[in-house]
Image (cartoon, rainbow, N blue to C red; front, side, top):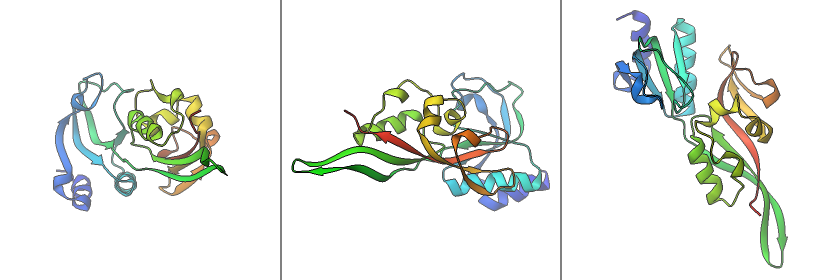
Amino acid sequence: MDNKYKLIIDSFGKDRFKFNEPLKDYTHSSLGGPAKLFFIAFTERDLIKVVSICRQLKLPYFLFGTGSKILISDSGFDGLVIKNRTKNIQTVSVKGKVTKYGIGVEEALVEVESGVSMRKWVEYLDSQGLETLAFHSTPGSIGGNLFIHRFLQTSAKSIKVLNLKSDIQQISALNLNFKRHIILSAVFKIKAKK
């Protein structure tokens, strides 16, 4: 095995990687040949570390979330494929009014990591009494959808990204660029259900 691959494997441990993993098992289209090396990032820290090491070692890598919007060749990928399974969601603040009838929530700021599926996010918002209509039928994950879903972009108050230098930045949706940024998480302003 190439020394570069050995270095990245040693950084996480051999049990975190799969070799010649069929990618068809991870896409909605059920298409895709083997990845030379396959890794699942469960935390933001894992995601930052694995991408940064790939960049330092100049290893080819491919990052994806749920696999709902990608097609992978049957010849596979000759590099490291990273599946983003980051999963944290938290309400960071709530705006509302206190009346004699109780506390009325008007809107909330919700931070969600990029690997969270839209389905899981909708479930969370629903459980918190927050509006979900614009997101119900959207497949995929937060990270991938932020690049293409206009309503998601307009709801984003800030987006935390890993830039090309592997520095973490807070940016707006207007500055988001598919070629320069890997989305780590985003904070959304969500209205309460009426």
